[in-house]
Length: 125
Image (cartoon, rainbow, N blue to C red; front, side, top):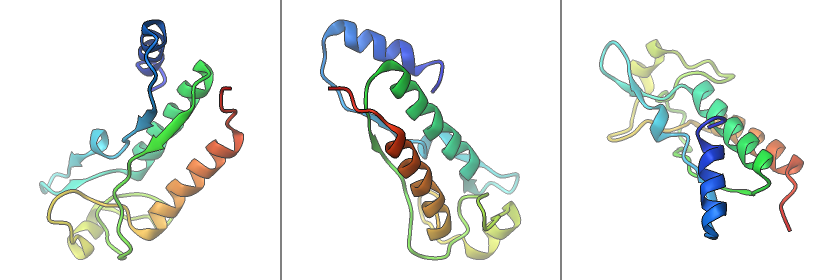
């Protein structure tokens, strides 16, 4: 995000195209464990979001959207976070039939990061 996004922002700006800059940190961070289970490390998701907000802020544009996948259930589908979901936990509480989702504690960590980023953002006039 920090290196690839700025040239894209510059190119869109030079083309005079109005856009909404949004980040989907979920899909680019999907991986498979040694057992073949799809998961997403929360730390990589958060790092991508931080990079997105840093790049948009540095370019003077608003980071205007975030796509996440979460559930209100106490699942273990994405690893990491304060509750420390490990690969071993995936076998116990993995309920997704498609893509791994954040559990409520992980989603709150992500929401806290977004709130901090937005609180410090200066939206261009």
